[in-house]
Image (cartoon, rainbow, N blue to C red; front, side, top):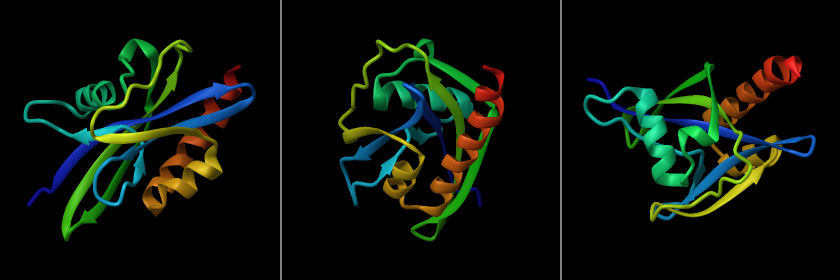
Amino acid sequence: MVGKVAAGFVIFRRFSTDIEYLLLQTSYGIHHWTPPKGHVDPGESEMETALRETVEESGLHKEDLKIFEDCKKVLTYQVKGKPKTVYYWLAELVNQNAQVKLSHEHQDFKWLGLEDACKLAEFKEMQETFHHCEQYINRVIKGNT
């Protein structure tokens, strides 16, 4: 049996010479921190889900972002004994005037550097995803500037 499937973006911005990642704090459960993501609706691709959920949860639109489709991380883990798969792509906030607007599903957001993002994310799979994205940024994005 296939478990739940979700998709989202690990969104970063350049702040001076630093890289900061966007984390949203849920307004339910243990109030955990994650990048914007959500469940794939029937007939929807993972990328369509990531775009829709990012707008719904953060107010950031496709036009505000540069999506790096070649930087993709797939997480698989158990939630209440059932399998869950989450697809994350890296995206850069390129519209510096764009403002994060939270939905009712979230109560707070933070832009954090790698170390602080990993501390707040808590889960090993998410920490590995941040490290994967940071390596990509350093190798591909910063390497080309």
